[in-house]
Image (cartoon, rainbow, N blue to C red; front, side, top):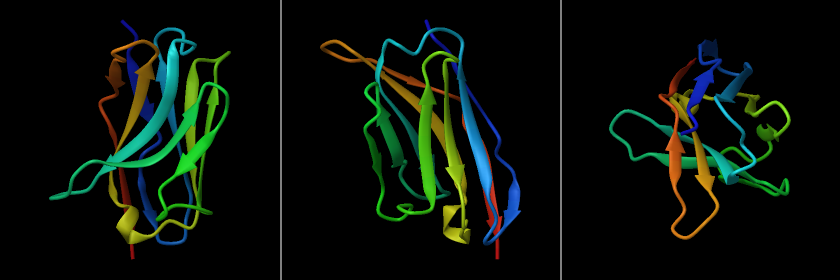
Length: 118
């Protein structure tokens, strides 16, 4: 079973940048889609960005133009470059991998805290 481990969360001022990384313990070739989700206190977990095995990306409207998702199948890693951070980006960010197959299976990391101060 592949394990996902996030890193890169930190405290940053508004307008700053962070780069989150998600390292997989095994091959990510088996993930049809990989994504970043976030969950702020008192709110539901929401999709931030996703990338397919073919490289197609999708972003939440709230982060379009500021965040960039990427995956490196050779290195079994996924990243999220976050620029122009806002206080409302404060949340725990989770790495997700969705396997091929029916039904697909979801894999989650433990999360990394991003805090943006105003």
